[in-house]
Length: 249
Image 1 (tube, rainbow, N blue to C red):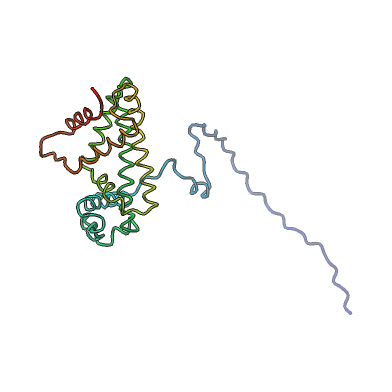
Image 2: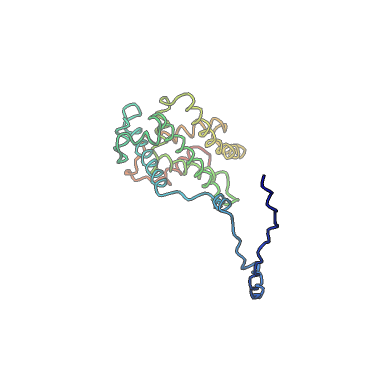
């Protein structure tokens, strides 16, 4: 056997130290006002802007087309009747293709419900705004005058089709839809009761408040059958005559 080769220690090579870099002056940290904080990509992408995001042009256009459909449908339901109006008629009135209404409403029945419910909701809101515009010292008579004038506006004004549709196409709603409309209508009419009760306490009301409310709405709503602005009577004059009919002077 050959004698083992004696092991020798490996001598590590000597490395020269790199020359020392010149020291730079310390940079003062940025002030709190001028400091810019860096965010991780995750934190930066997950942060959302405050508030509701702005609607896109397409979303705004969808809203306008939906409103055109409802306005066109309301006029057709009023003049032709719900049963005799087709979705093709509604689309044509809004300047759309025949299938477009189903993009916004699942059925003609759903469109009828939207015409009534959104119309009554807007009427309830504008009624409250009309009352809020009165001075705090307004008398019950002045309040009733405002309520009657507002009701004539939604009955006979520029966008007045939804009330006649609600009056004459009630039978075309489903039972569930009728309950929904009844809740909004009851809220609208309930605003009249404190005013009528105040007039009754003054002895100015011609009937018991609950019965008077039914008579008043029956008489006012019937105006859609006979009123014509071409005959020269204004809504203000009509309001004065209705007020004289319902309460004692």
